[in-house]
Image (cartoon, rainbow, N blue to C red; front, side, top):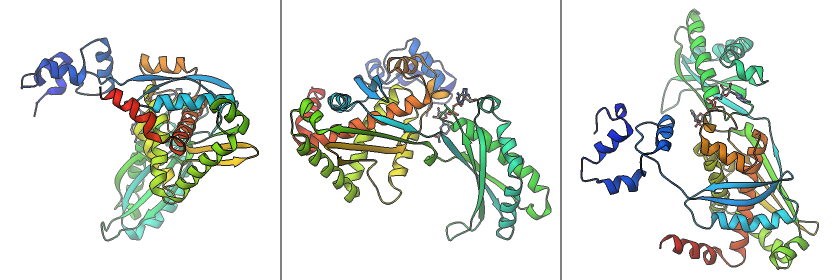
Amino acid sequence: MIPGFYKLSIVQRRQQLMQTDFGESDMMALAGAVCDETNRLERMSENVVGALRLPMGILTGLIVNGIAHVVPMATEEPSVVAAVNRTARLINAAGGIQAEVMKPVTTAQIMLVICSACAQMLCDRIMSDKGRWLDVANRCDEKLISLGGGAFDLDSAILPGDDEWAETFVVTRLHVHTLDAMGANIVNTMAEAVMGEMVREYHADSRFSSIEPGMAILTNASPGRMVTASVSIPFECIEGICGIDGEHFSHLIARSSAFASRSSERAITHNKGILNGIMAAALAFGEDTRALGIAATDYACRHGHQPLARWTIGQASLKGTLRLPIVAGFVGGTKLGAPYQAALKLAEIHSYHSLCSVLAGVGLAQNLGALWALSTEGIQAGHMKLHLRKMG
Ligand code: NAD
């Protein structure tokens, strides 16, 4: 235990750690040197003693919605950046990826505890006061409202007591258009304000005197943030770029995709490969990669673990589609800091729409790269060469 660690400066914290047999060279290995960057990082997290560095690789060009994006990718895993670059050549030759992004919605859950006999009455009351609760939520973020976003709907449901916990919960879901923001703080602020007001107001009504606040927090399930990326690659393009018979290549890729549809064990690894690409780019752009990962995984698991990307054979072409929720923000907390702004500038990303399109595009290209290797030379030939280089 190191009491008061949070009150110390970065230099003092490092000295504290080095008072044990954890020496200066260990400290440098753990968290690098103290520099201006460290001070910036201290504003992002707590008890900061330094920074972890990751290799930043570059996807040298992927065409998404007609624009060639140069995408920085931060990952410790060898062969991710090499594979996506190889595949991008093929995809670009076919005209690139088309992506569609829905107007993003983030949802919060407001959980109240109430006696089971009153639960339905409370649900009905909340629904009849819906306009008022949307107003309370929208008063929390005038900027968002002025830009055309905000809370637009809510619903309420009962979660009855069970063997694990006897109390009845009434859960109100607040749906919010978060525009260009990832939205977690926006929605959490709104949900807490609504819960506070609800408890105050309903507690004064003798029918609801047993009401207690439970919690107010967004759900990371994100069906309101779906993004679709698709590509169609003519056989002749495959032959030109890969020097492989296009029909045969497409057959191998589509068959590998079908394997992921039939086997959830395969689908999990198929999807991990997609996230290899999306997460590496998302990390470079400063996104909340945990929110992104859990939302994508939740969506993949709707009916057993299903592949997020599928490949089929079309009219003399290979067709691929990736569909998943992309939790990302073009403005807000995730975008503070020069490295993230520089990453967006390099990638020529100027909007939320383009950010999500590029992330999905990288995921689809990464998936094709993995299936290409797996269904031809195998993953180890290329991967192990690069892995062994990493191991020195
Ligand atoms: P944020 O708190 O910075 O809020 C965004 C702000 O930007 C809003 O106040 C909004 O008014 C303003 N804004 C200006 N222009 C806008 C535009 N064009 N579109 C939308 N908003 C605009 O950021 P956030 O996105 O609400 O929260 C993201 C952060 O919350 C991330 O750092 C994330 O890690 C963190 N977080 C995540 C979870 C979770 O996922 N469970 C929980 C809590 C916090």
